[in-house]
Length: 340
Image (cartoon, rainbow, N blue to C red; front, side):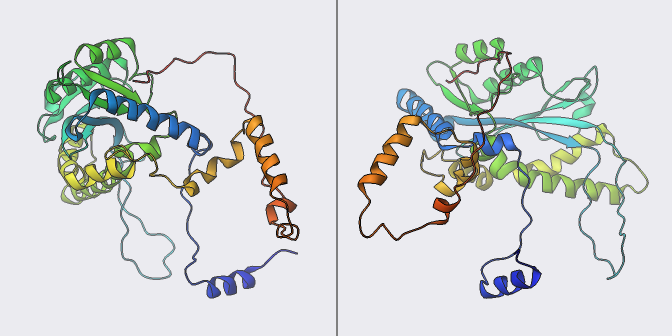
């Protein structure tokens, strides 16, 4: 027998703290990779770096990239009830993407961004209206690559003034463009200590993803919508994107947003217990337990059997939670990422 709508209605009425919520879609790789083992290893490496170099908050940085499209998501508008379709004008059906590489540190400062335009050659006028100090580059795809990220690293080092006598810690994801040999050599030569996040965990561990890029996307969409209202009948091209970014960037890259990002990820101040057990539940299905641990737990259970435990039956005992089989890996070797 399956519970119906009426049961659900009365169940929610009895439990007023519960409500129907729209779940945020998260990929299987992210759900399974964000587990206690991976997170513990990351914080162990972070702690070793901190003990060795004694980084101050002003010398702990995070770098990541995000896309900016010429076709925005229209905001909500007021309309009459019963109207099935409500339209809002956008710049086109398919837009072009301009990548922004941004950097922040744990005291709330930020490094001027880099914009990568989907063109073969970069022209200075593409940066008209961009945030002060912004640098530009061109790539036909509009995305970053090893060459473009190397240029950003030089720009980053010029602003943070890092050296072997004044080292800085840079945490970022292990995308192949960020762990190329030229980037690693440049970082070592200028006192930049690199620490990468475990694969597919940046949605939880990366300060930019947690508290900065979300507000930035909101302000960017608002700025695009305002531009469309002020320029009726005109589509947005990549030559207006820098100006729009210049309006959204300072609203999102505030000291409050940036410092909160480092705090909620446990990076600064260092807090390896920032994530509770409930946040690792999504990886339970694919966690493969150590056989020795399973035997030890079984022995402990036998030793604990007594009069008080004989009549206790839990749902998990009747129907244990399902476990996924170990994943099959392909024969190809992946590029190794630097630990620090």
